[in-house]
Amino acid sequence: MKRYHKFIAVGVCSLLLFTVYFYRDPERTIPNEKGIIVSPADGTVLYIKSYNGVPEVYKDGNSYILKDIQKYYPNGSYVIGIFMSPFDVHVNRAPISGKVVYVKHFDGALYPAFGEGVITKNERNIIIIKNNNTYIGVVQIAGTMARRTVCNVKEGDYVQIGERIGMIKLGSQTAVIIPKTYNITVKKGDKVYAGESIIARQN
Image (cartoon, rainbow, N blue to C red; front, top):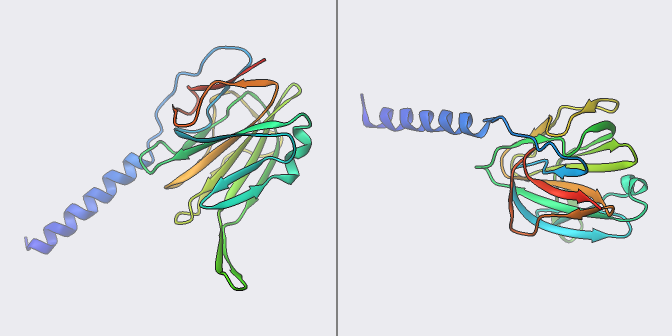
């Protein structure tokens, strides 16, 4: 076998191994407690922000104002951003049990901006899950390179805490929106795991 054939073979095998590794979907042990919120994603807590008005999420220097869902958080909210590296499991899970009452998709794109070249918008999905009078939001935000989110739930679906609800491909971020009736139990820099790590408890 010629040397360049060996390099091609090694490259193909490496790509296949990375693909299998990237799409892994391990089982998780879901906490059996009342009044908790679990992480919707594997990754590192990137930011925790408090809002009395319209919540926002951030990715790649962009700020996305979530005006459409402000009505679900009349008393304010916390937003926790979770960074998912290419080496994290990229399956997203429901942070709470309940009914999916809102799903909205935004395409990623490049937009010309006068005097500024090009503005990049990340592909993203917003999912709101209702449990009694509590609304928990999950925002899937794809990276500018991959620009690919997968949402496996629709409005009207019922989900169980820790249930798979979608995934994001390659470097990306998942944000969770929590009403201020909960206490946040994580801090910036913490490592969290989808369906397993408790990130908030009800007051």
